[in-house]
Image 1 (spheres, rainbow, N blue to C red):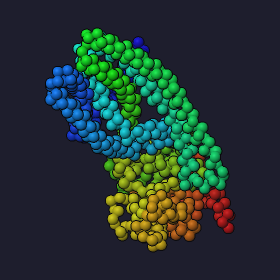
Image 2 (cartoon, rainbow, N blue to C red):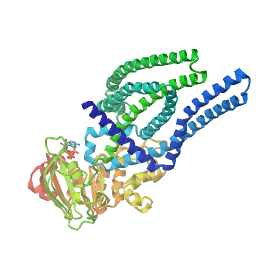
Image 3 (tube, rainbow, N blue to C red):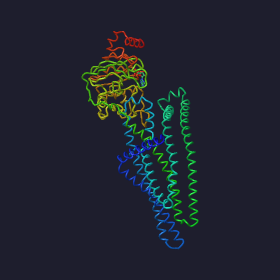
Length: 602
Ligand SMILES: Nc1ncnc2c1ncn2[C@@H]1O[C@H](COP(=O)(O)OP(=O)(O)OP(=O)(O)O)[C@@H](O)[C@H]1O
């Protein structure tokens, strides 16, 4: 009963995925798919036509040899057969071309849906290793999986059409022969499906190890890490780790293949025995004159064709089942809940009139025992400059991500002009915010793009570009580069001009200013800037962020003097808040940290 239920589930899954994928293919490329189907159908019918033609040709040749006449008919049949071979080649060529066109269209479609889906997933998803395992499998076979699915299906339809014709030939001789041969395929189908299932679940089991192996290999070849790995002499260690994991996975796969090979070899032996038995029976009948030469040749050809077709069909069915399992994962991926799907209908609260209210905010990372934020409450007026300070791991970056609606809060509320952050349309929220994080992106593209990515629709505005570049001193950098703002940056592509980390950081700051948003968030914006650049930036910050609410985190407390509000964090809580003067008067944690830093610089 359990076996029957499992088989039903497998069939439902396979048919479901098959129907959905075929519907998708016909929806996005109806004409190409119709042409491909016609070509495939033509290819399916040709072997049957060839068998009939062979039987006729043998009969005509026999009479031409025996009676010296009918040569014309035999020649016509021969030419007809050559024509069929020619047609088969043409259909093969057309098939292949059509396949390539569909493959391109499908890859673009699936790639677009997968890529855009991944950008709409909640950021929180990207914190879990299960997500990366799934993504690894979903992204891996994207370029061929969809069409492979259809190709396997059409191969099956083709095989069924061919087999139907061949079985008619066999039925004409003896019904038992046809039925017996069809039944013989069942064990082979069973073995193939089992193997597909084993392989899929083995892949699921092996994905974490596979990703780890890829990670070790990446450590060896990535430029960012190469220096450290050489200095510490870690290459051989990582190479060894990669080899171990790769070998473990590989040997497990080989073991499965070994077991399956034995079963398949046994099955091939059984087929050979059946073929020899039936073939010798037919030969005996032909020798005794009870079977003419033409039907003997046609039957023998049909027999071997049936065997080949049944084997191929069984492999295709099993392949399609395996593809269905993977395709189902792709459909599941596309169905994953998106960022702020539940709410997010409220319109933009920008420009802010009342400010930002945070009350009793708490947040816990999935699987973490302690909350990363707890009992956070503060109020920000429009245009305020807010500094968030605290030791490493205090929760500064996490607070910023919650403020921007990137992480869903566990408790409490964040409201922009009274509207809870999770009720604001994410696009409206993002449009009003510019943020540069500690791990900002170094786009391996032109300097202009690196700044203008702050607001794509203003990409061709030269005044805005110059103004944003001047905010961080990137304009000075542009004047030193060989092609100014058009200079390609980074080392990855031909002609790229590599910069120092601090120079990259200046450009990232300009990108934030280019956006000209109502809220500006700078997470450790000056960590790599030289002291002069840092001082200049903070001198200008008041002018630059005029009218904008600005949040910045920093370990350099000197910059807090210019802040309207300082939030001092420790272990996920705000332990002090107020202006620089108020906090210095308080003689608490902030005053202690400030004095310690001042001592160091003295
Ligand atoms: N993705 C994550 N998953 C689980 N815990 C995390 C994650 N990111 C941060 N944490 C934890 O949350 C706490 C706060 O981290 P956060 O990055 O906000 O600190 P921070 O104050 O910005 O530190 P730093 O000054 O070093 O940048 C830390 O204890 C950290 O271990």
